[in-house]
Length: 133
Length: 487
Image (cartoon, rainbow over the protein chains, first blue to last red):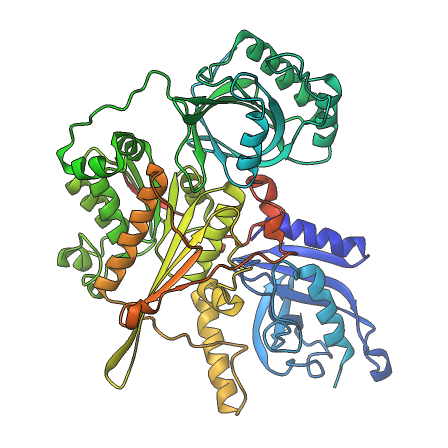
């Protein structure tokens, strides 16, 4: 993992008032706190935490997937949510990874490590939590 | 001046080196001139690596043109010092000595260096101060230097020009007949100076399989003084057709490829220093070794390795030649035997600009085996549901190669490395493809310019000071590298 790059990207998120943490266990994850959702009209929370794995070799490998706390009411409603890509443990919680691939044919631009990163992935997460089924 | 035993290596590369040479030699042949410059650096177990990153050339009045030697005016020094507060690079002075005056520091040079070493430390602490002297002796450009680092002076042991011959000043050294019968033909063809350069040189070979082993053999036979071999894998039965120096017992005992390479080198010439490292780029321990080499050959044909090599060329100014080979066929006929050589010099476009890598393939190469299995299963499940499973996993065709193909590729790489080190010829392409079974070999030379907005245009020579802009980092799950042999 490129610690210097991660620091830079997370700092940019924090500059924009996005709460975010890097959690390193057997592998590294970025946890975005209180990401806004379109849940209110459905009686769901207006914000949720989201976990995203830091891919091995980052930034050479593209950022992929997104996860929500196990049991999250958003899981059945987000794109790829019902198609679990595994359960991970981080930050004292269990998270279910959803089949969400914005940079890999999932609707976003092709991965370009010179332009994209965790600081831009937030846009995909907001869009993901905005389009609820 | 208190001088430390460690030695620094300085790397220079076009276009900054070309511009710098033009500036400091602008009053040649009789008068000196100078320029401030910025340098990246990396501290390695072998010593300090310093890389030319940018120039701060003098404006009118910054140097006193009325005197023959270099007299830097205070406003110039102050401007450079204030700029250093805003960038992370080391600062240095490069100046010339008149033609045929050796680049030995004079008393005036000593005074200047002592002054600036402390002066810049106050503005930009914990950074090296670099002092280089350029001269032309007997028609050859030579450079000497020293670096003030951690409170002591380190002499510059070698000055390497990326994509060109070493230009270190070796006082008192004369080209002498080596009397080595084995390299006599090479010496006759390229000269005894070339032979000495090869003896002083280090070449790192990344990948000790079919292609790498052929390159290793050619380099050892040419008399390269030191070889660094890097590969994580062991010999398997299927490798025996390609790997030079391998024998069936190596596969039975699963001997590491780098050990086989080291043994083969010793059999050819026991005086060659060999470092056999089980590991891969861009692991930090491997990078430490590889950035100190004169030339690096990429022989893995893996995309993540290609990215790492491109990064080394860009940030550490290491000249790299990468290769790939492929066998194509249909209906029982061999239709293509493709060989590709890619040159990565610091001024060349990076691997991303050239579209040499696919992010998904790189991700698949780098992910842990558990994730690979999980993604393969997800891809198959998607296919069973009638969906496209590419987002989970994309099966990559097994690239077939055979021994004579990898030998051709490795030998060509070694040949160009010898040309670079000897200063006798250079790869006349940035990317070369050929098909060994096509008419006229179907040779394609692709010169791809860098993208205007690519980060690779900003950090040439920044070394560790542009870590945040590294193209790739080693996965956490890779095994720690280890040296299996060192002679």
